[in-house]
Amino acid sequence: MTSNAFDLLVVGHGIAGLSAALSAMQNGAKVAVLERAPVEEAGGCTRYTEAYLRLKSEDELSDDFEGVLADAGSANPDPALVAAMMRPAGEWPGILRTMSVTDPEFISTFAGKAIPTIKWLKTFGIRFIPARLPHITGREHPGLVVPVGGGYAMMEALVNAGRAGGVAFYYETAVRRLLQDEAGAVVGVHAVARQNRPVEFRAKAVVLASGGFEGNPQMLQRYVGKGAINIRPVARGCYYNQGDGIRMACAIGAAQSGDYGYYHAVPVDSRSGRTEAKVLIFPFGIVVNNLGKRFTDEGVGTEYRTFDAMCHAIQAQPNGTGYAIVDAKINDIPEFTKAILSDRPPIEAASLAEMAQKLAIPAAALEETVRAFNGACRPGRFIEMRADGLATAGIEPKKSNWARPIDRAPFLCYPLIPASIITMGGIKTNANAQVLNAEGDCIPGLYAAGAVVGIFYRHYPAATSVLRGAVFGCIAGAHAAAKFEAERCEARTTTTA
Image 1 (cartoon, one colour):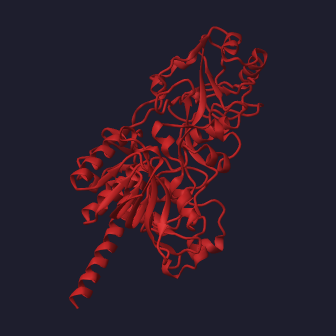
Image 2 (tube, one colour; image 1 turned 180 degrees about the vertical axis):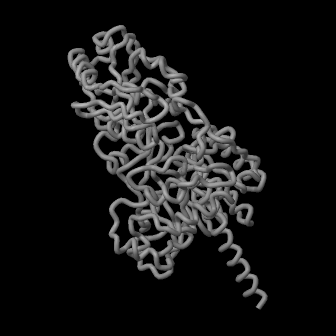
Image 3 (tube, one colour; image 1 turned 45 degrees about the horizontal axis):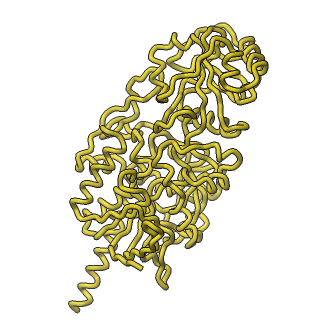
């Protein structure tokens, strides 16, 4: 078996892993990055994401930054235990350190290190600009920035800097398990290269940055539940996210955290093979299943949380597909095509019966659904720019906003399926990115950053995942490298003495 020795091993090639690798490299560590994908597809979700960041500018957090993280940081925790978190973290018992709550120190560290991390990323030539979202208006959002060139540009800049600084990259290398010494410290990994060739890497520490389990049907079925097979990863890179980091860490006793039953997603055109083929016009029409029936409130809003809700509702349908139907009045909405990223044209029909035939759904059921919906619509002013309160009455499920009759041909349809962006269950770390075991103690030599760490419950705070990966990847690499240097200094002192 081939064996290699380094100071630090980083499992994963996305923003979290690369940030860890570069941070450790800059602090004098000998680093290797292990990536299961081939070089031309490396980078997981980072390679394909626009990489929205929840910042007002590259120098200032969004006003709600810590608030939205705290809001998504727990489900129904014991209030007595939450109150105990107000004590210094060093006084916490193990049950508190491993509780399913994202602790305040983690959130405050995230907030405190976000802007310094952005400035650090800029040293590699990465530039940031105000974000333009693919929504109806396409206007600049006051609380988001984005790197020029998206996640791919960030990845390329960090990879190039890593290569120049001596970081070793191993592609098509899938890590199978963590190696520990007799004292329980992580001292390397066992992996396989092409043709299932075993290879062992030894190191003083390991950073797990291999993402969630968006590409693992078995884990999705186990944790997300019924209809999980209907979920498609939003981008090709997500297929490589098999939950390996979570599985390996749990195998040696890591504490679990985050909402395993929830995932952040967007509805995409099922016919399109394009990355993130979003179709976000569903609030302005109706969505039916393959029985021709409405099944959810299409008009809750146009925020990220409403995209998740729509996806979860679609997941539960008989064939995991929702058919978003609008009529010709969609043309009254300026630039509505900005909310459609599919490369396929809509299915068009001159009548509902013809549409039902094209969709292979019962015509009578679709026509009755539309008749009942139209009858439930009420007079009022339609305002596409915001939630307008134009709701249905006397029908279930209701539609909360933008409820206009579907009555003007031609009718247009996009078949929608849920596309997962990030799963939310993972392992638990402290604010130094050190992995905790189920008793609340640090597992020596083991760090984790990015989506492999579970910190969200019930909903995803938009535009935080890439930034989280960068911040805690940087922290993990620097913390590990500092320990290496301390050990070297101690060894030199002992030798001199």
